[in-house]
Image (cartoon, rainbow, N blue to C red):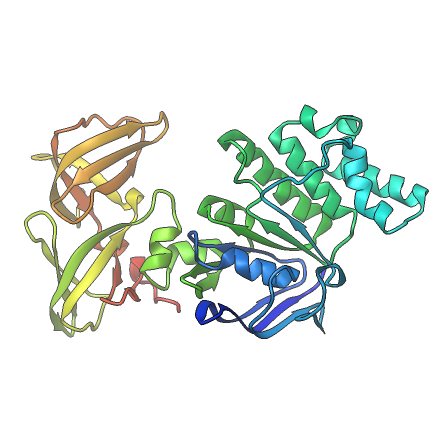
Length: 375
């Protein structure tokens, strides 16, 4: 395992800048996920680390050695792609052994390493099968095995699970997490699926529009997003946003008016100052409680009149989509026993302590539970 350092690494295609200068350090043995929407630059950044994409500016160091202009084969990395890229005419054993044979390793060494990789990935009983006889998850494990036998300094994963169905993705997430625990290698993992990033990574790097928006532990990004993009991207279902405006400020806090329901106004004592003007208030789906109009709301909550648009019942959890007169429907996450149905009138009860507040530029000015925002 080795440290990966990016120092002012940027990428341009002609006059078009696709990645702003990035400084990042991945510690030895760390599992870091690059996450973001399509076009955010995450795969381009990974490919520059691998040497598959040239660097326009800056330096790439792996294990303390500068490899900015080194060939991919000279960097000590192994990459697992979205496509399995297995040789269809070779069985599993030969696919895993292929790179070792190219390197002219002794036959006994090749056999020992292939069988060790197969044991680690639970492929011992599949070594004589062809790729056509394997499931998608088994093929991806073979592709990972081909990387393991190279004993790389750094493993690079480029959306390796995106071709699998939902059940197989869960299984492969567990396999990759177990693999990291067992071999302790440095791993960098690119995905657009924030669930994968949250469940696998020691640290997440959230990218958007070619720039790092926030870096930190998964739950840190969830609880203290640095801006509205991170708040909306991390978390499933995503955070709700309600347009609002700052209406006054006192020594006790700032007054806000929501552009929802009947224009509810309230004070936030934890927010000591904010410029007058538009802001947005974010609230997680699990922080909203619904009750039928005329019922007794939980103490200390704001009440927003709502109409139930639709209800999704998944057994142990229910997602209710409500119209409160703002720009978008709000998502409410609750238990599986919700009695509301489409068209019902209800009240959405929200604790002000659960609010995140973002300024007009999208920067966090207050995180939930009065926690100080991190940038």
